[in-house]
Amino acid sequence: MVLLIFVLIVLIAVLLFLVFVSLIFRKEVKATFERDPAAVSLFEVLLTYSGLHAIICHRISHKLLKLGVPFLPRFISQIARFLTGIEIHPGAQIGEGLFIDHGMGVVIGETSVIGNNVTLFQGVTLGGTGKERGKRHPTLGNNIVVGTGAKVLGNVKIGDNVQIGANAVVINDVPPNSTVVGVPGRVVKKEGRKIPGISLDHTSLPDPITQMLDRLQGEIDHIEQEIKDYHRKRSAEDKNEI
Image 1 (cartoon, rainbow, N blue to C red):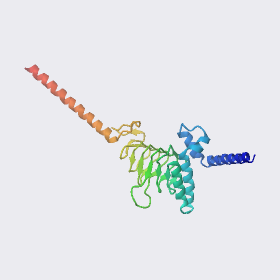
Image 2 (cartoon, rainbow, N blue to C red):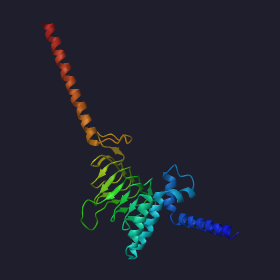
Image 3 (cartoon, helix red, strand yellow):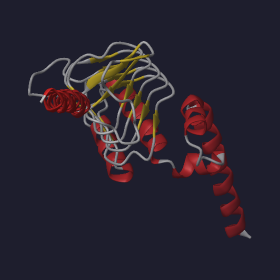
Image 4 (tube, rainbow, N blue to C red):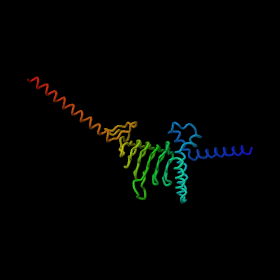
């Protein structure tokens, strides 16, 4: 009987804790359901989503850091890294509605700033480029999607409503309402308009340079064919004259 009562108390405590977490982090929980079709229940999301766990740990460590608590914020972030595979420095500033999908290998540096409703896929790095102090990590605006394995490096600014393709390496500022792919990252779509000569097929994530070279090669082939047709025509005319 005592054991049963103890189990019931533990279950009630867990349920109350889950309700508390779902209320405090309701925007992150909502983002999970909106952006992940695999999310089927609140209970599953709260207990099994490593991205949500990492965000919760970061909220706690960031608050402690702002209060001036030494050591503990970084210790919490390292525990979260060990448990989730996601490393978020306590100093990073993160807005509401962040969704980290799968999350393994995600790194968010100390001076990173992330706006609202941002989605990061696995392997994303928001990193620095040197040993300088001060602002040395990216600033992301609102409603941004950063694809699998993408790297955003240095004190660069990514505007609102930007999509960064998988494995892109972004080292320069990106204007709002743009799409970036390639290494280094290049804008291939801006304000809803495609940049000429560059494909937007994100299933194969083309390199913009390769696309431009392919176009150039196509033009060269066309010119060569016209030259061959010209010589063939001249040869036929010469035979007729004879």
